[in-house]
Length: 114
Image (cartoon, rainbow, N blue to C red; front, side, top):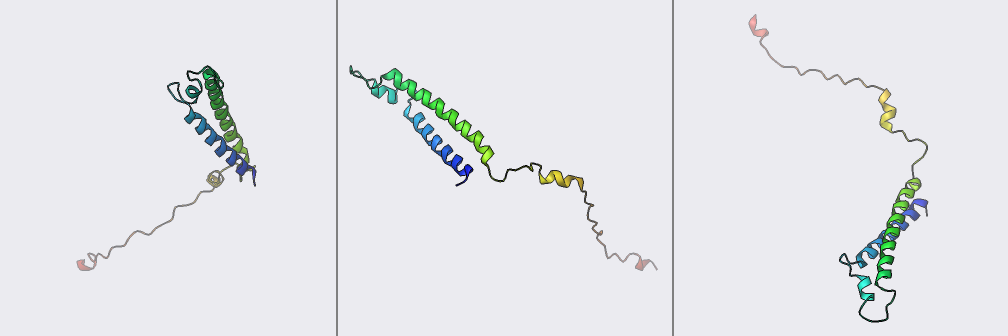
């Protein structure tokens, strides 16, 4: 398994986790944090801590995804020392246009003037 394949698997996994973390959050302040912070006296982590965890995990996963994408650029197969394009190499050679003969007409006006 190549380096690029490993980066690709990690990028897909982090993207999936990021989607899950974002979908758990409610844009109006509810979501997972509101279910833990109900009216009971015992709280599992508390509302504030759950919201902070989801917020920090969102930023951490987004940063990790960006870093993985940037690092995967170095693992792309086929990238070597030759970075010039073929178009730049062929720009020094010029090709002459192909001469196409003009169409001939079978006009018998010259033969009728005798």
